[in-house]
Length: 188
Image (cartoon, rainbow, N blue to C red):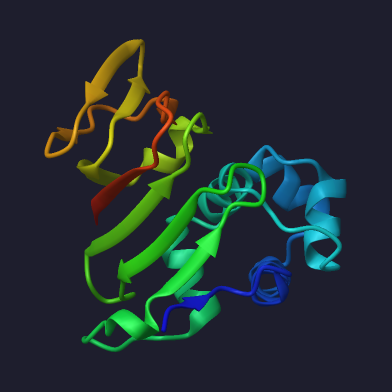
């Protein structure tokens, strides 16, 4: 059975506080680096709210981590084998977007993530989240629109897009059916 990453955010709250304190950063320091309000970070660390996907990407980037790297630290795993039943799943409280970490290791340059984007939902990710990675998205089922650096890409089932230079990216499901896609990324 799949495991859902603690929706209350307890693991993420502990990790954010730990990463911030290990660097000697105040809440204001992290807020400035991540482009997220100090109050929002404080609420996450106190487990009063769950972060959205966009917020997590910004926070991970401030720590010079990918989102998968942040989850890897929260989970504390490092096995070479990634069993289906052990792959952590996280649900974005804002969109219902479901992210399954298929493979990630701190000592391996590749990460594989499966995402299900609900109908009519979208996520906007800042350019900073793509600064140190190269990635491709392969649509497994449904349709996905990707807005990248002023370009609109419409992907159907089976289509794959390799990302260009870092820019703000919108991933949108403009249909009435869920879209499932695979993200493969390499750290550069």
